[in-house]
Length: 317
Image 1 (cartoon, rainbow, N blue to C red):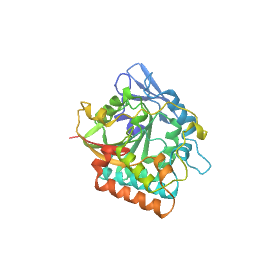
Image 2 (image 1 turned 30 degrees about the horizontal axis):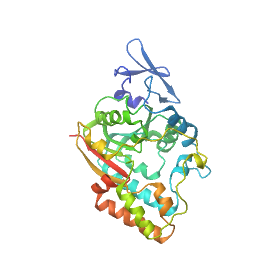
Image 3 (image 1 turned 60 degrees about the horizontal axis):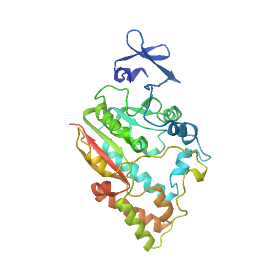
Image 4 (image 1 turned 30 degrees about the vertical axis):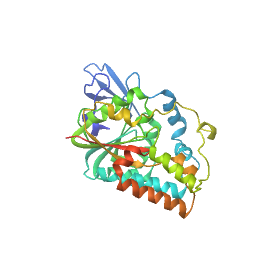
């Protein structure tokens, strides 16, 4: 905790913070005080951008362990069959190249419990991985995996309690589109604000629709490819309801007047529902997903523009 106090700031006043017993406080008279819960600072303003139903979903269900030890969110949302999950893991590992330069601090914004082993490679060349999430349940699980290589902060993505330009790199995976649409620009600008000059931010997003995925679906139907099950809504699978994600179309993102330039890459061409519906087990499914992975590697920018999950690559001069 003490190692990152110098880069923290009050989310209300933006002033410095200092330890006072079991709290972090700002101001000479401690006008704003923030608790440490099991050693994790909870640096939240009075109101947060993410809906309470999403916070409760992850705290009370999503990050709980299922019978196989994985999070319940992973069990219900991911296609965990060997063939499909191998594709997802390759997609995660592929993005590690962006963090090879390393540095002092890697910000993992919306880290959750760091649910995939491949994500651990991202901080190899950094002194510390700073995990930020609204779920303290998730951060406690992340701490079990990182131990002293990590720092942990409960914070809101639209009001990060960090000083300007303190992170060498930022990874933000599947977070922004879960924030209400009216706050997504603010969260993106916060990523840019806390990034150091010369730093890089890798933001994995989801388009509301994908031209490439739609065409692949038609191709799969023509080839009579079938997965083990059609996609089922989360509620019908016995999962608590929560507010829906609010992914914005590519046109919205490109019309914004950003203070930065960016390029596209691709995390994954198709989503889990597609794989459950169309990707069979065995060598046929493996060949199909291998071809998809090769295609998104060769045509990464086009795949990011038109595939299911784009990656925004932000480089700060």
